[in-house]
Length: 240
Image 1 (cartoon, one colour):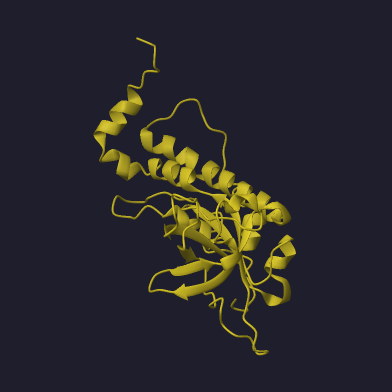
Image 2: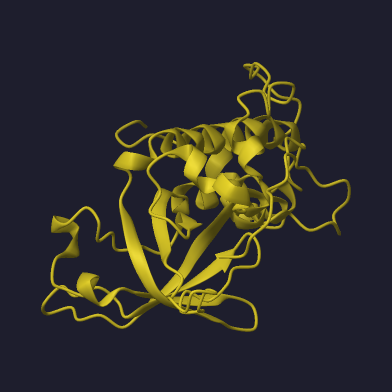
């Protein structure tokens, strides 16, 4: 794991996300989460000035959608913070090897976790696409372990899984991840000649958050008139 000191302010921070014009790109939620520093995630006031009481009526669709961006981010931050505060109880796994690709990394689980039904062993967590994982060169048991001795705070998003056997329930052979910063290969040798260990601890899965986040993109919805019509004219099942 690369040595360094994590910053106290993330690139994302508690900023408000909204387009100023139609040509501006809607932020990628994964990028937002990976931009948060440890201090950002643990800051209960990160979105204090952004989360407002949601009114009962709205002047237009855009103002309606904007009311929910900060509350969604705060809910995600709070869930992530809760996992970091209870690291000793979250599922984790030892990584045997990590390879750097052009735009991502590939991780391989330790051989002792390449067994059927690894969920029967809490130390053999099987990643899923959409997981946000904490990477550490020590098995994390407390939040202080994440930055002890100058360790950088590193999290990653699981983008894909490759391999595995559907018949014996074996986990995939490798996983693709996008990390928040530079990480060293798990099999790099230290000065004493021993391999550097690397562990992954699951903080949360953000697939549902991503789906909701995409629905808050006003420009994308504006170009999809059919979806807007369904939202405006929605009728619960069983009602005329």
